[in-house]
Each structure stands twice: as C-alpha cells, then as structure tokens.
Image (cartoon, rainbow, N blue to C red; front, side):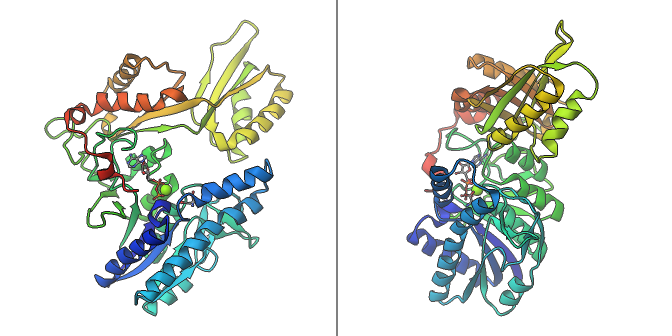
Length: 430
Ligand code: ADP
Ligand code: ASP
Ligand code: MG
C-alpha cells in the first residue's frame, strides 16, 4: 500500500462546494489503495483578509500575534474537509501544525521547519484514517505558533512527505502544471511535462508562485518527487518536478535535435523594492558591514550594484530586497549610515524583477543579449541586471512587468506564439 501526501491550495477549497469536490478527489486517491495525508491551505483569500484586518488596526503587529492570527485560516479549512470526508464514509481526522508535530525555528512570519514528529500522523494513518493537516504552520521552541511565509503550505506538504517517507507528493492547485510563464499573463504559455528541481527552485525564487521556493528546496534535499496538478482536472498528470527533466515542454523544445531548451521558464516578481545608499566610503569592509547587518537580521538581498568611484572617494550602492523587508531594511540602513557617515538613503517600490531561467543557458552565449534585445524592442528600460549560471534577472518599472514577460516569452518560445492560444480557462480553473 502506497503512502501519498496531497496538498490543496486556497482556491481549491474556496467554498463548501469546492471542499466537497476536494474531499472526492482525496477519497478517489484512497480508493486506489493508498494511505493518504493531505495538507490544506486556508479557504480562498482568507489569509489576505486576515492580513488586511490586522493592517486596519496596527501598523507593525508583533510577529507572534501576526502568526497566531494568520494560522487560523488553515484551522478552519482542515476540520471542514475532515468532517466532509468522514460524512462521505471515509474516516478522517484533522490536525493543526502543533498536533501534527511540526517544529519550527524561533522566527516569526517565515520560520523554517526544523523537524516533524510524525508519531500522531502515523498513528491515525495506521488506524486507516485519512489525515488532514493544516498547512503553513508549526510550533516553535517557546510553544508559540509560527508560520512559514506566504505560500508556505507547499513546504508543509513536501516536508511531511519527506518525514513520512511518502511515495509521492502531489500539489493540487488551480492550474494544471508548471508552465513556461504564468498562464494568466501569457495565454500561449507552454506546460512543462517535467522540470528539474534546480530550475523549479530558481523559477519559484524569482516569482513563479505555483510552488513555494522552500518547498522545492526541501523536495530536492529529501528527494521527494513533486507532481503539480489541477484540482479541477485530477486525471491530468500535470508536471513532474524531480532530479531529471527532459527540458522539453508539452509542445517541444527550442534547441533542435538532442538539445534542451536554453530557457525553461520566465517569471516576474512585483514584490521587490530597490534601495540605494549614496556616498558610501570607498574602503575595504564597507560592503561586508552593510550586507552583514542585513544578513544577521535575516534579510535576503538580491540584486546589487555599486557605482564607479566618485571624486570624493565614495560609491553609491543600490540593491533590492523583498517588500516585506522594507521597514526593517530602512531601520538598519539608518544605523549603518550613522556609523559610516554616508550620504542619503532612497527607495523605490514601483519596480519588478523579470527573470529567465534554464539549465540550458549554461555554456550557451548570447542568451543575455537575446533577453536585453527583446526587452529593448518592447521599450523597456533596465535598472539593474543580475546573472547566475542558470538565471538572468532584470529590474524594470513595475507597470511594464507583464509586457516584459510576454516579450520574453515571444523571444524564447517563438513557436508558442504561432500556436492558437488555448482558452485560459482550460489551463486555469477557478
Ligand atoms: P495555491 O493557492 O493552490 O497554492 P497559487 O495561487 O499559490 O495556488 O499558485 C498557482 C498560481 O501560480 C496559478 O494560478 C498561476 O497564476 C501562478 N503561476 C505563476 N507562474 C506560473 C507558472 N510558471 N506555471 C503555472 N502557474 C504559475
Ligand atoms: N494560507 C497561506 C497563504 O495564503 C499559506 C498557503 O496558502 O500556502 O499564504
Ligand atoms: Mg501557493
């Protein structure tokens, strides 16, 4: 008998009718002779609603209270799903993060899972019950609720699959797989039959929200094969995320015979902020001090540019962070500025980062030039550029982000542009 972990996102359990449908999908998987644990997200836009509500009352709520609030969304959907399954004749039990043994680090709002004590989940599985677990949450060493960061239920599912030694982990969502770009933005986007962990990880990191980056990281470390598939078309095999990918989409690759695609995906992240600090003294150790301060406060810096030295022996340093880190970053920069005697601090939130990702880029010169050409032809100005072996990112005006993704898709998936675009509804279920 196989053990499978399934995960259902917010839109999949958006109302009573959808919860009943999800219960049917789970029951069908159990009927196929599997033991099933399912991770569930909060219903629809519940978490957004809770964020908004907190914002109406306080500007900077404490991490502890914020997490206690946000975790409640999943505590509603999980018992609703369990009671529906039980009423259909499939005995089920719901467990919250603490009951399911999810132990997190002592950090709020984006804690990592340290371990999962699976005894309780195992016990219920052994009794033949379907176990429904709240996603996105765990308990820290102080006994407080901690959440895993927005979109973190994917990570809960993969981590549980790893801890249970499950045979597979299926992520059910409102789209039937991983596409070459967000199909809501690019209607002719191509579905990938399979994709490597490394490419999926980069894509997730640069904004393809179909999977949470830490989920992919966890899957790669624990060697959990992920299938991304549609709740509304459950027989469709979707996209397999694993160590090996063919590099080809459902509709063929761009590289010609025997060659994989150069680019396997395109994504935009509209939640970036660009910060700049002017007149930073040009001497050894300054960058280490600045970025060390950010790192020790758990703030990840993405793109970095240092200007050429100016006449007064200073540089300007610009970089990007996630918008959620803006206030903390500004506070730290003010301190660093006072210590270093540097100039002014500026920031800009109307920016977006567009990226192309693909292992096929390695050793293939000219991909960056093709990217810049496509963006130039679409009249899009580049503010910053960063590259890695398998990724190139450009910071641009936020208002142009969707146009940029479409222009890049035409450049790197030209054959898709000639196809009759499928109805978006055929790809994205609501
Ligand atoms: P869930 O609530 O199930 O976790 P999400 O909204 O977090 O679902 O993620 C699914 C959404 O991700 C899709 O509706 C789609 O708009 C978006 N998306 C972004 N990039 C991609 C991509 N490359 N492939 C598929 N979906 C993508
Ligand atoms: N409910 C949480 C969110 O909206 C976690 C998740 O859905 O993955 O971010
Ligand atoms: Mg999600």
